[in-house]
Amino acid sequence: MGVVRAKTAGFCMGVILALQKLNDLVQNGKVQGPIYTLGPIIHNPQVLEDYAQKGVLVATSVEDIPPEAMAVIRAHGVSRNVMESLRQKRIYIIDATCPKVKRAQLLIEKQAREGRMLLLYGEETHPEVTGLLSYADAGAFVFDKKEKLYEYPLTPGSRYCLAAQTTQDQEIFNEIADTLSSKPDLDVNVMRTICAATKERQEETVSIARDVDFMVVVGGFESGNTRRLTQVISAQDRPCLHVETARELPLKKLKAFPKIGLTGGASTPKKLIDEIQDILEKNSDP
Image (cartoon, rainbow, N blue to C red; front, side, top):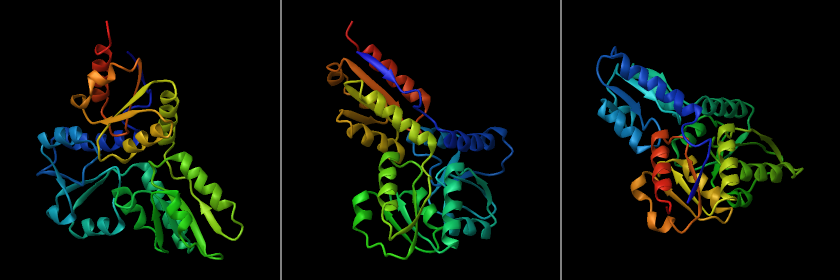
């Protein structure tokens, strides 16, 4: 069994920056009292377990954080009203929002000031999307499939802007943008908010999938960008498996595939990918 590992597998820049901020707080020992993250810092249960052992608490809402405590805003960002609630409770805020997400928030805010309704390609319940929507004061429509947008009654003469959750499928977004731009009766500003690293990761994953017999994707089951990798692989008619840890590998089944591709989501630690690669290689026939 040969294993082809994606060079882009593992932590993205936004995750690295967020974890660096949290690590600085944990390691310098100068913080009095507990450190909270508002929601999980990233979508990876193994990383969250490590921080829990270091005393980092995950708050599900602002109400869970006592006044004047320290709270780290996760990489996905939060809504404007949540930020305001934190300030009102005099909570010390460490903003670890991914710069790409922050940029998308500000772009949406600018378009809303111009009276443009937001058309957002993303998962409505995802925390990043919740934050993005809070900047869309002129209204918004969220869709996770292009067909939902095509069925939506867009009004000729109204003003719209099109954006995407930063980890969405770039190819599908491009198709949507081209379709809307081809309609002369629609006024739509297209904002390219999908992270370049996400695009590169998806493109490399597709390239590897086309050249192997089976793909293994490593990452948290709650990670949107990791699930997206399985989707772009499935679009290539290649079998794939999404796992969080090596324990979930069906090693007997995988022996039947001469060449296996391996990639990981943007919130997947390198050590987990290393472990799975090592097991897959040792699972090869002598």
